[in-house]
Length: 377
Image 1 (cartoon, rainbow, N blue to C red):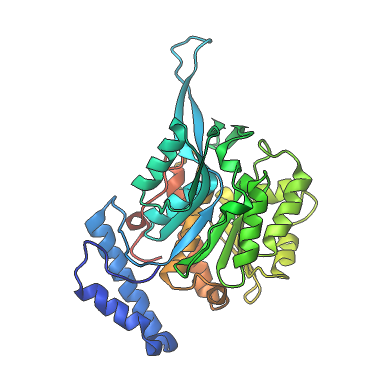
Image 2: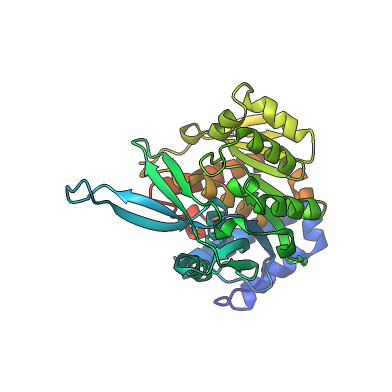
């Protein structure tokens, strides 16, 4: 994000931060950059203290454009009153890209959502959620088509399995003619999940990242869901195509096993790093996360120990935290990724692991706010 005054801030402290951190001398000098980090941390801490669960509204800030599906996750309630012919459900707005957009806003980073939404009641509810979370809705396209539903069963270990009702639904309907013209306000683009595979949205998003990857950060999370798109070879082909344009790839070890059961993660990561990609991060659930880099090799960080309610939304929280970390340091560009030191990368991994762990303590995709993640990313 850009350091700018929030609605609740006076002109004093924020103006000083802006002036210092925009100066060329501060950017060149190591001590100046460190001071910027401390001031940003202070501004972030002030944000958490004053707003609590409110998300700060930044005027003129740069943003991420998050692209993909929006749907409702349908959870079955355990208590059916003893009647076998009756089921109770809880419906929660979701979809991996939808969650990432909200996660960014809750962590104080401007985000817009490019998606197809239904004109039905559920589609209107999805729009209302985005507006409530202050996600920019200027790139939403409405369709007279149903809203996708994902039936979610949570296992004893908290891991979800999904069954989708999505053929012909609104979030798949984006076509090339719907592609937005982006201005300099859009800092980066994030794409992921089954929108990479189902048509016509898959071709639309691929055209978008191909068009923009020379000048904007492209972030990719395959987030494989075989139920809406069961052709595993189709997934491999599409991910390979998107990876050619991605600077940052985050993928779970489960997804890698599904996609490439006969290859180890390092082999896959090195293949991606041989092209445009600069960072590959593999999440490993209770085993933490690993990073693969061009400059600094590979290493892992452990998971945080928490009492897990379920893991729904943990990967999306991790993704949003990665982008937040980069944004707070003005490193959310292709050039910025190449400037990351090993120490800073390690801090980024730990920040994202901690954010994901917090989500695991709650039921459903309840993504954390910035002030819950500490004073400094």
